[in-house]
Image 1 (spheres, rainbow, N blue to C red):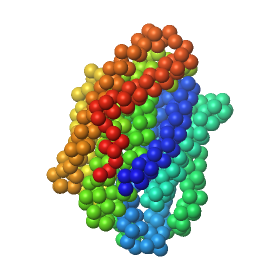
Image 2 (cartoon, rainbow, N blue to C red):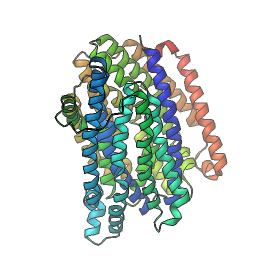
Image 3 (cartoon, rainbow, N blue to C red):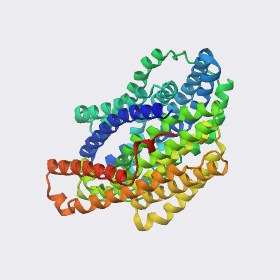
Image 4 (spheres, rainbow, N blue to C red):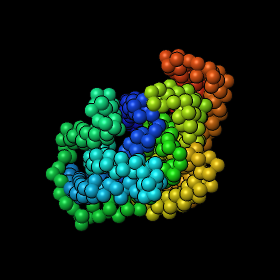
Length: 518
């Protein structure tokens, strides 16, 4: 089991690495083209709306509800019944997302008013930010169809993951990044507002992602003609699991959305600063947290179906250990290297030194919660693999309410940084409650070996943090460097930090066998 999980995790992480690197290149291109001004705020909002719905419905609630039921069909009912379930789920989901997309395109002014309330109110009063509302209403008509493409892509990815084929699903975001980079570099000059080129890049990127999955579905023998199946028993179970799961696994996304709504009331650039810092956070989160959660979900579902609680505990414990081993140094590394990362990746073109400084502050606030974001992904999977959606719902609602309280408290003294910090604090609360409920129900309790691993990782990460803090250049020295020097220093710091962490964690007694399931 450990060998298969580790192999699957490496494959998924490798494909995700390619995607995240291209994602950073994409964000560098966006920062150079748009900076952190009004056009950047508008594009980021109109891109975030379908992506929020994508993470909420497709990758979040849908995947967590679909995979356990699909695994049960695959293990107990044979290929014919499983193919029929896939056909009816794809037909039902496809119809719903197409209708949602049509409504979103037609009602884009209403959607923007909900997500960018500050701009809408300014538009009603004839204020300066009213132009942002008008531009966003038009641009959303182009980006919203991405939801339909990516929802079906997520369905195909969930099927392939259940069949143990993680590489194809992990690679598909590469196509979106390539599409957006191509649009920005080669087609921006054809539009009076360059942000529209990026919007079309999102549209065609979503289409490419969906088409890319089809050959892999055919090869796996699971591609079926979509059928409407709202009342199908399997679809009904997925639907019932999915509705409460909307709140369970996607609380962090809802919190980020609240940040965006509140940021629309702050000074121009706030949405962009949060976006760029969040993008850097997404790199380790996707590379490690999402990868680990994705590869263990089918395994946890199989353990539950086969009534093997000990194997279930070992699988989940492995996920916790890997998250701690990879998440802790990533979190502290982002904190101590926030300044050079923002400078190297984004500070050029329209993105100036003030934008870099503001983005750096929110990155530090987000990085404080990175480990908890990762733990939420893994711990939530333990509930959904057991087809328990009620518990994550109650926890998710509590975390959202707490996030709003933190937002109100922190936004006035800290502005956009307060919004990022509030998200991290609520994530810590969310992860803590998920674990407490699992322990209370005797489903999982962290092993002594995992506690020892966690302590070793904490000590080693602190050693790495101190090392990087004392050897890196100060702000003036970074500003005096040219781009090539900054890149060289940053690569050297990341490499040195990683080496120090590995040496320190080995010195504290961690061995490869500790990262394997019992």
